[in-house]
Length: 370
Ligand SMILES: Cc1ncc(C[n+]2csc(CCOP(=O)(O)OP(=O)(O)O)c2C)c(N)n1
Ligand SMILES: [Mg+2]
Image 1: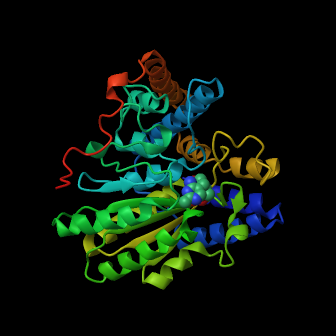
Image 2 (image 1 turned 90 degrees about the vertical axis):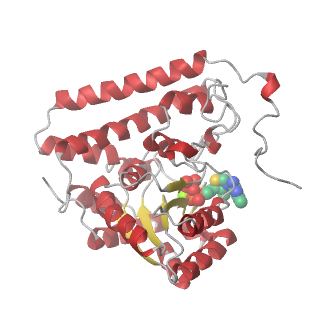
């Protein structure tokens, strides 16, 4: 299999754009390419790659369907899509084990699907239906599925980072070998909550008491603000140095590179109880959120260049090169479409939450206020 197809495409893409964002992207991606080359060490067989390819297709089609639901007035509230970033969570969560926990921000549909939440229930939640994952009370931004390891789904930028670090402490305190995969964006790293939590993670990690895997998904933008307009120090992962947390960059568009880093990083955090950070250079091809129609902060050309390195397309190219037929890939896409169609049908036909549940599940029954 070819080893550098995606990476050479990325250089070609960014060399056509002289803007500061492209400059940052080029530097980071070249660093990522130099730091790990997942393709060469790809340990997976074709069956496993096909399985991951299917998951990525389900996520993409699921997001497209949710967007259609929003634009036709069937989905209310807010909606943030993961399209373009699929390789990051797909690669990292491949190494999730039952004792682990995952916490993320509001771009959370993919994490739920990958952890095993049923697509029908996830879609019903987005539709605000009583059959939804959290009974229609959370919506797109607040998916929760504790049994499958998903501890949210948070709308306050950076607000979940201290929770994730605390959860990691608790996992060691309780004597488990679990770790926390803590996902957050380039916009969240400037939030005070990140810096306080990272400081504690580094500190507690000295005693092996903080198995947090920080996964910084750098998609170049926090809403409409590029990394360059948000910080004078644009090497984001270097910010972990302040807290004694080791880190590395990865090409987040390349599933194989992510898998390679994920395997090592997860094992390392699990064994040491120390935090570790991955900065995944990625790109959302979707708008920031449902209300982001104009996208004035980036050009159509920039989006088109990144689309050439669509993470699903890169996996597809690798599969074709390895001899998998078009028919096989078409069959997988059809299966993925059937799963998403069924999720939409279920969500549309489900009832709204009953009125008498308005005040149930608002506070935990187990909290003793005496
Ligand atoms: C504390 C706080 N400030 C501002 C907002 C508004 N807001 C919503 S998303 C967002 C950008 C976050 O960007 P990033 O962390 O890079 O995540 P991405 O959307 O790129 O996945 C902002 C500023 C918010 N939700 N919470
Ligand atoms: Mg971002």
